[in-house]
Image (cartoon, rainbow, N blue to C red; front, side):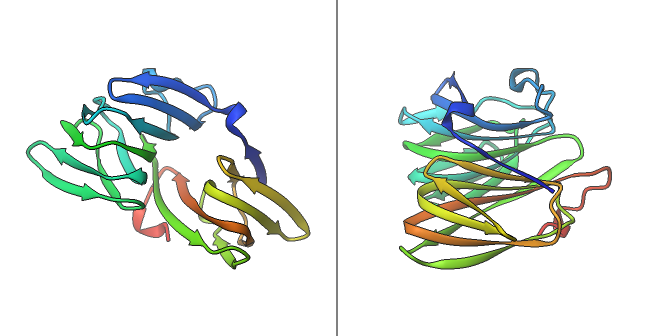
Amino acid sequence: MEYSILTPTNFKTINWSGGTSTQLFIYPGKADYKKLNFDFRLSTAKVEIEKSEFTPLPGVSRHLMILDGEIEVEHKGQYKKYLKQFDTDTFEGDWHTSSIGKCTDFNLMTRNNSCGKISSLCFNAKEERKLSVKNNLSFFFVYAHNGKFIFQINTEEFIIHKGNLFCIQEPDNTHINVIAEKSGDIIITKIKTTTNVNTKAIK
């Protein structure tokens, strides 16, 4: 089990047709998002125009969560969905997708033999919770959207600030004791990168 803390100095921001996208993590590390040769990618994006078209990404499964703002997503020929803070949508990258509204969102993209899930947790100041990290995962990420947190793993302690990404690779069965120094929100991402991926096995 290996863990690390990534900060905004580690992230890369690019422009897209509706705003900006900040890459938080890509795997493998030498993969290139534009070449679509990654297994998975984590990012945040700002939608800065009222109506935007999503970039076509053939072969990519997408998981979207709204961090701030509200939008209506339309997948042409599929469905429409209204999303407010911490709501999620899962769809395929080759769908013709557009949105109405401005927001900041969190994105998980998976390809090949990778799959994943995203979820959110909100904390009051001084609140304490335990996160279970299973050994059937390849990666376990916690992104601090707002607030400041203390993460305790075994005998080690980490300070996680707003905008930090905490990463555990090849986790053991363990727990993270999370203490919120002030109120805030975290986004949890669970990833499996195995030959026989079963999404239902990610809990």
